Image 1 (tube, helix red, strand yellow):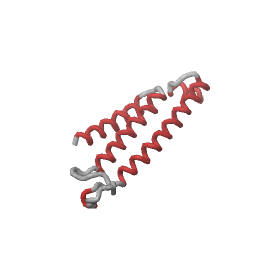
Image 2: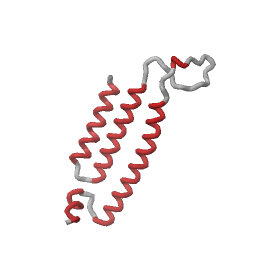
Image 3: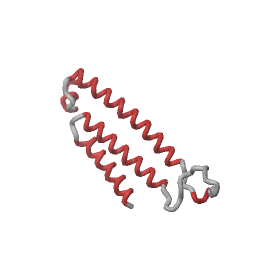
Image 4: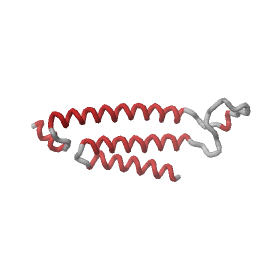
Length: 113
């Protein structure tokens, strides 16, 4: 139950940062925090108490005592994709700062008009 609360709080903190902050770096950080919350939620949903990881090295292998490996693989893929998206977003932020000399999203929006 604690993990569900932690995952939900991370998602809410990240969403709050994305919706209320004006600094683009803080918005990217909020997206990363929300992504971490989603990953924690997926791992928590896939966990079954009393079962082990799906590793076949044990000679006393019993499939009914193992957890489903799909959520773990899904989260591992999501972590890699999230890292790439965060790196790309930060590279775009650097280019925006070089061009506009500000990271305030309101000022960058006003430059459009």
